[in-house]
Length: 107
Length: 222
Image 1 (cartoon, rainbow over the protein chains, first blue to last red):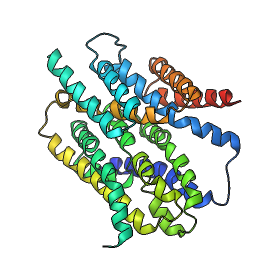
Image 2: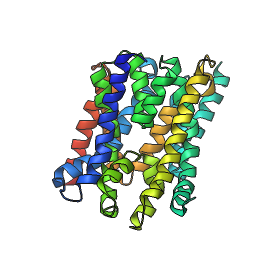
Image 3: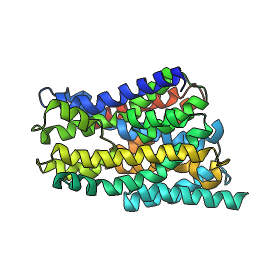
Image 4: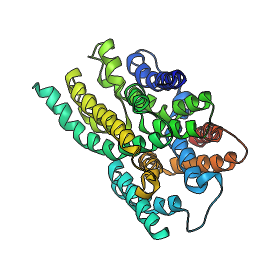
């Protein structure tokens, strides 16, 4: 294992574990300012969407709205399943299956 | 075996099953992106956050700065803060060292699966041993197996595996959208992120879009 990769993993570990650990052990005593709490509540939807939309619209870094953009096409059944079932497992499975099928049709 | 551990294990079954396809997909992609199974093992053990691991691996291959990877990881995983905070009123009877261990097992899935047991006020450390133990074991085994298999899979696109990450984002995002305000924030963030992608490097577009959109959300709250 490369040493620099280990430092990266360690850094990722620290920034991931602290938000998991600190509220649970501290928040019974101190509460955050309401404005901070409100801001934090918007983070999950904001960050997920900021990650998702470029992945769908900019495959390989270029804007693509055509029918050969398999990620964009696969996202449609995926979103329908997500809305209907609210089940992560089924949503991911639908996405993988549709994406694989589209690859067969295109190639 | 202890009843509480068994209860935890039963609660973990859907979570552990759900991690298999996502874990395999991450493992395969991570091997294409140059990570070894040892890297993947430590990542799954120490970070244990699917979306962040996918992103880190993809950002590594695109040559992103480590600090950008770590900030993105922080923002992507900041949602755990709210989950951890929301569990705090129910787990006051558990000691701090054990709470620390329990909190390290919080993921979107274990949080959702274990919430009702926690809310009953009777969740025990042994319950969490079963829930978190089985869930994280499934994650570690799936990701490492995927990485080892990955060297034999030459084109993961053909198997649809490159879409596992966007699919997971879709699943997680739609679980977050509870009202029109959430939809507005998500919409703004997505559009900003795409626009910023043309003017920013190293995935800083994600960080900038998230910070601005969450602030827009706060303004909408008033």
